[in-house]
Length: 310
Image 1: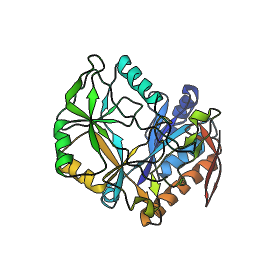
Image 2 (image 1 turned 120 degrees about the vertical axis):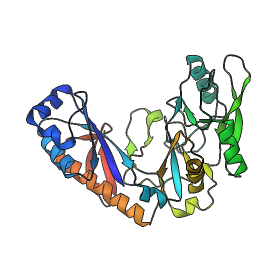
Image 3 (image 1 turned 90 degrees about the vertical axis):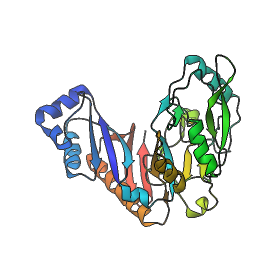
Image 4 (image 1 turned 180 degrees about the horizontal axis):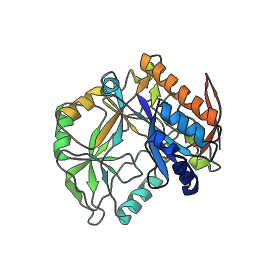
């Protein structure tokens, strides 16, 4: 496993780095604004430490995994690779429907809502594709053929709900809302899950730079398809956690539209490697003293985790 890193900086700052030749350490700067790299990487370390003398990057990190990493995982987080764009009326109808739903959970930083219905005027999907609704939800649309695969395999934790055509009020006959209200317990707030610092209560919570991590006991009673027991998207919606057999069936049938990110269990060798990886990354940023991560600056790094400043 590695940490992919995208760094954004001002054009003026980046031009200084280009003139110095430092940007070649990370393969160059794109569009005069950002670079892409990964960690661990000696070139990235030299680049960020040197850049800190001239200005500041805001870094957006995320995880990448080898086939071996994925083969060892028992659970995965679904990541969308296909999006169904909504019309303005679709968005407004679904948003209004969600606003009427009660919050689930007493912790204001983790409470969530699970959308009960999808409203779309038009759906264009190939028979082997799944797609998420818009850029702001975690609700998926699946065609009849994909439904049959998971129905015939008797996968549990899901149901297939009708999708309403926003313009006509009828249902889309060949497409379905993949729905689940089977939720897991809270994830562990690991080293890569800092608190999101905001003056607005509705925008407070916990980020997830890296993997979703659980105590092993939390996953003992998991279904094939599950939702996280806390909001992970848009400060409203839980994400999806699935068993490895879901991924196996997806790949075996050559389906498209999901990527699968390994979920880690506390106490495993993979979790230990993951913790050491993020500790070393934060250690690098602490040396630089100025670069931020998604708008927040590292204050300190310790064995118990990482503290951030707004």
